Structure formats: C-alpha cells, structure tokens
Length: 384
Image (tube, rainbow, N blue to C red; front, side):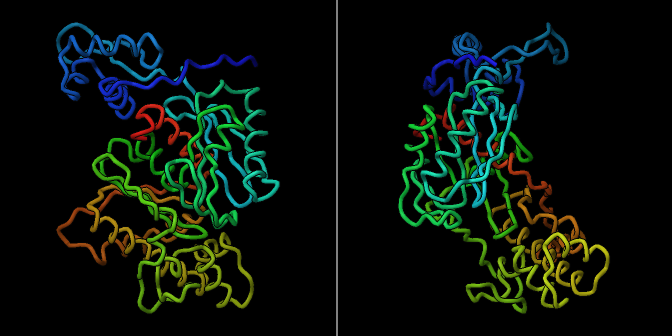
C-alpha cells in the first residue's frame, strides 16, 4: 500500500493541549461541557478548536441532543490523522504495533531478537518497522518500552534482561534508524500510561497496575498523573513482605512479593512438592483440578496477591487496580483466595477497590509504548 506522510509534529499551545487532553481522555464531548471543564468562554473555545479541526486533530462526531434545545455536534479526536509505532522488547523478541491517535491497534508484528546488544535491538526494530510500513499508515512518532530503568525518555541506564548495565542512548539510536521522533520508557510505566488514557482505568484519576510473571511490578496514577521515578524500573514492590512464614526469594527475603507471587517461585514450590519439574501453566491447571500440593501453593500465592492489592490501595487510596502480566492466571485460578486476602487487612467499613484481571498480550504492552509517544505528541517534550 502507498503510505501518506502524516502532518508535521507541531507543538500545541497550552489551551489547545488542554482541549485535546479533555477530548482524548473522555471521548466525544459537547462544546458546552468542554468549555465548562477547561474554563473557557464559548467564543474562546470556538477560536481555539478551529485550527485543531483544520489540522485534523479533532473532528465533529455525530449529532446528539442533550435534553431540550437544538442538536449539538460533540468534538472527538480524529484518530486516523496521526499514527504511532509502539515496540515492546523482551529478552527474546520485539513486539511491534501501529496505532491511531486513540491507541487503537491497526497492525502488528513480532520478531525474535538476533542478539541482546543495542545494535541488535535497533536493527530488529528497524527491519520490522519497514515491513509494517507496507500494511499500515506512516507513523508520526515511535515509542519503545523494555524492562529496565530509563531517564528522560531517551537513555536506558539499566536493562538486566538484555544484559545492559551501562547507559545506552536508545532514543537517539532509534530516532536515527527510524527517521521518527522516538521515546523510550520503562515497560510497566508505558502500560500504565495506556491504561490511564485509553484502557481499563480510563476516567479514573487514581489507580494502580500490578503485574506478576517473572517478577512483580507496579504502576501508579494519582491526580491524573503517573508517578514516575528513576527507580521505577527496579521493581521496588517486588520485595514487600506479605507472608512471615512464606518461602525465601533469591535475595533472601522471606515471604516477600517475589517469593509469593513470581512465576518461578510458584514453579519451584510446586515442583519441589511433586518431586518433578512442573511448568507454570501446569501448576495452575493442577490447582484447578484439586492437586493437594499445587492447590495449597496457588491458594497461598493468590491470598498474598490480595494482601498486596489492599496494601497498595490503602497506602495510595487507589480505588481501581488493574492486574496483568504473564503470570496473572494466578488471579483467575485463585480468585476466591485473592478476595479473602483483600479483606484480611482492609478496614471493615472501607470500600474495597474494584479490580480488573487483564490477560497478558504483548501487543498491549507495545500499545503502551505507542501511548508514551502519543502523550509526548499531545503534551510536548517538557510534559510527556
């Protein structure tokens, strides 16, 4: 297919940015409500939205009538004007997606890494992005996420799964290789950004994301802003104590989140009890079938996950929690124990947080990287 270059990446004024954010995060919005939310007069709103409509960032949605009066045409984001490349890198492969401005995936691909060096990662991304160009619109910008520490959305300071222990200017390398403005993000932060703006936590100004798998991860949004830190990629929540009688993690912590929730810990406990190697998915299946060893291990782990959810909610006042990750089948199989764990440390009069279990799909993590690029596009480099 022939791809049409998108309009230039032009910075928005503060007022135009506020309008775009309000519509992007809340969906089609009547002009009167938009003016009220932002604190603008009807005339000012008309003046500010005119160039956004002309440049294809906003569009008028279908007519709607709010009570009496003439029909109004709400403003909505023009999702198809700009597209974004998102890449999630693991220790084995790269998952790529192209999304529209609403972070809806329009095309995707997966490729094994040829190696772990920065050059290998950049070459794989460049090759697969070129292949995607034949079946997706040309992107305005790109985002890449990985497990590790990232500063200024540009430099990877550590990525243990890729064996990177020195600064890697990955943003600059990808920008040069792809010919696109490219931002880099910690994978969990990127996923949290996507859930905040476009996913299960849309409309919630305070929520948390908890992931389980090889390790345990955590993302937090408070007052509609993601909580970021140079230590975000360290998995600080992974060693929070959950069970004083639990097993030890590799760092020697007894009953911490890693010891109780990480897939390798569950595999080790079940395999030891059954005296044979047992893969993670089989551990869950055996627990469902009532195997006495697997059932006890999975129940204890799910209970600990419920305790972790309550700790997070109680300390941050988050009323919504998204559970995901390659090991999140634990929450499905052990849901009863999880909810018991949530109640165990919760004030009896407190409203329990709502939660959603989101099955793992690395294309959604790649979508998170695209969401980071979308945020930078809308908010500007100084705020994104």
